Length: 177
Image (cartoon, rainbow, N blue to C red; front, top):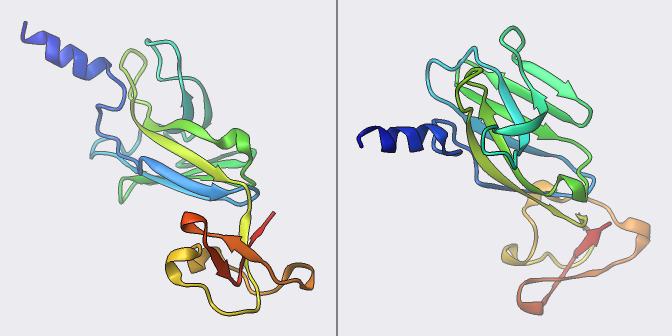
């Protein structure tokens, strides 16, 4: 009877030592980065990003991108992964986001052939456009995206209004599609 909790811990996904942000957001055509951490002793193991498997015996059906024991960095198309073994943290970057990048993914450590991989669920949300800061009164901070996603300028020379929280408007912020 004592083995039952240990067996359940070993077989259930997300119960390992890998931690992730839980949820990340990005804009269509933009990029996003996901930081995941792992425990000491796993520095030389491969790190991966994948869609969860529908088969209970495997973590992933196919890896989207994965590092190797000899190379802590890998790139596959729009996806890259970089393992900082000193800080026991790896970063997955997705460039040129599309709607098909939305959903639940796993960031994880490939533990071994006959062991269940350690992983964390990450929900990816992709918004339809970027935001463009245009001339006009500044928006209240609570109504606009953070400054990190703003760019100066005006698309096509026009001013626009963005629908904000609770159906209000925020002068100076327009969605960039």
